[in-house]
Each structure stands twice: as structure tokens, then as C-alpha cells.
Image (cartoon, rainbow, N blue to C red; front, side, top):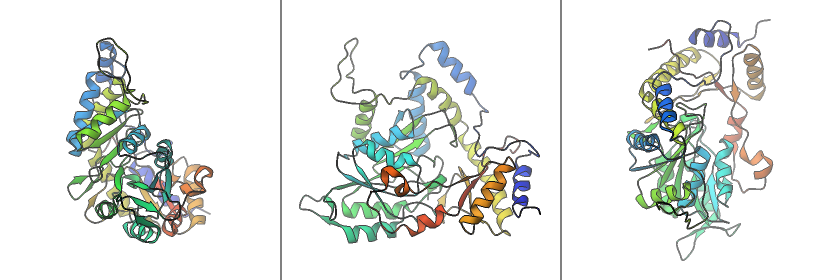
Length: 387
């Protein structure tokens, strides 16, 4: 008996003009000056963390996001770590984040010496829920005489809130920002997956004190690895850059480092690739939006629900996403599509189910659990044959 998911496989093959070949989830597209810029870097011999392309990459990120400052890093995780550190997160603090996220979000909190606290998501955006955040804070925190937000159960300071724009779909970040301001909590945005996504006319990553992005091999644009931190605060940007370059004081020949820091600076070789990719961002986003429209039309008359951008937002549709009716249907879909050489993947396991975060404090995570059992990503690559 043919699978009920065979029409989905056939539609994906039609959209990607691949009647038989393996179809990846999200392959990189190199259709611009990538080879030219990388070769230029090699010939210059400036292939490490000093070079013109690193500077240009930071300038391009400022232009694209509207941020005053950008700092290039080796990947999105190191950008997150730096952002939390310069935001003032200290050893023993707590950081509120969402349980439905890539593990790097929670890992960066631990790297900063803090403990993640997991609060539920909204079912439509898959990102941190303002209502759940407010309810959690009302029940669990007090503001001390110094204006610090203190967890009544643990006695720890809640230093920051770290929401993540899941799969490039902007969450309700404006409401999150207002809540954080009211409670004296620093907002840091994990915008790793949302380059080219907007709330109104403002780019994701611009609502918090700092925002971070990833340029991993599977992202909308890539440089193999790569990350970026953005902020409008000059002092924070300077501090982040200093920490990313082993806290070395500038000097013609002396090696003097004034604090324990990190070797997180993006190499010029990767930055060259990033610059070539960013030059094509508008074209890539338009191409991916066209794919999302094709998927939306197809799934309109099917049982699976295609996730769309929330009202008032513009998603980059990094990964097109559907919701199955239950876990059994999800697993059947994953098994069938992958057996047919069409790569599909489930959403992540909840962070609080992983052994290293099982003991962390959490609120009611009903929405996150519901999504975990049903959400699947389907092929979302740039299609060279679509103009």
C-alpha cells in the first residue's frame, strides 16, 4: 500500500527538480564571489584573524541588521558566550531561556558559569512565550534592594533572558523586551537562525542589549563556521572584541594580555567566504520565500500544518517546518521520507530532557512538549533553477 506521505515526497522532488537523487535538508549555495574572495585571501597570506575581509564582514553585518557595531566570531556559540559575558552574566547567576532550542543556547549559558532556567514557548512561533515568562517571574522572583531579580527558590540572581528565534521565525520579542525591562533582566537575543528575519522593520537581534548570529554550514548563508555579535553599545562591542582576541593589548611587538580571555576571532579566510555570501543575501531570501509559498500552497489541503510567519513579522524561512498530528505520525513521516532519500528531521529534544540539564529549574513546558512530538523540518535549500 502506498504511504500517505508519498505525495509529499513527490512534491518535494518536483520543487527541487530531483526525480531520483538524494535531497538534503539545507545545502549551501555558492553562486557569487566565494572562490574569488577566498583565493584573494590566500594570495594575501592574511588567512588568520587579521585581514580586510574580517573588517568588511563586520561592516556588512552592521549594514544588514542596522546595528551600530558587529564583532566577528568563530561560530554562533562563541558569539553567544561573549554576549552573555559582556552583558554581565557571572558565575552562579541564572539565565532564562527556552527548552525548545539547539543545544548551543543552553551550552553558552553554562560556558558563562550560569544555570539555564527553562520557560515555555508559544506554539505558533516556537519561541519563548511572553505570557509564560511573565507568569514564571510573577511566581518565582523578587526584586531586592539593589534592583536585582532574585529567584526565590534558588536564591540566585536572574541576570539575563536568552530567547531564540526558532528556524528563523521571529518570536514575540517586543513583549519579551518589555517584561525584561520591568524586572531588570538583560535581554540577549539568540538570532543564530534568523539572518534576514524582521519584526516590523527591525531586524532580529536588535531588540536586546546584544544579539548573535551563526554562519554554520547549514545556515541561510555560510562561511563554514562563523558567528557574529551585534549591539548598539560601543563599550560592549569593544569589550567583546577584546575578549575575542585573547585580551591582548595593542603593541608593535609586546605580548601583554590583561585578563583571561578567548581565541574567538573569525579567521580572514572564513570572513572572505562570508562576505561573498552576504552579497547574495537578498537573492537567497527571495528564493527561499518563493519555496515557502510553494510549500504553503501544497499543504493547504493536507493534514500536516505548514508553519507560517506570525503577523507583523518577516521570517527568513531558513528551515521550512510542518506539524504532524502526533508523535506516531511524525515518526512514520520521518521514516518514510528518509527511506525515500528525502532528508527530513525532527525538532530538537527538549533541553531539560538532556542529562546535563535535567536538574535545571523549569516552568510548565506543555507547548514545548507538544511541539517536540510533532514538528518536522523539510528540505529548504536554495533552488538555483528559480529566479
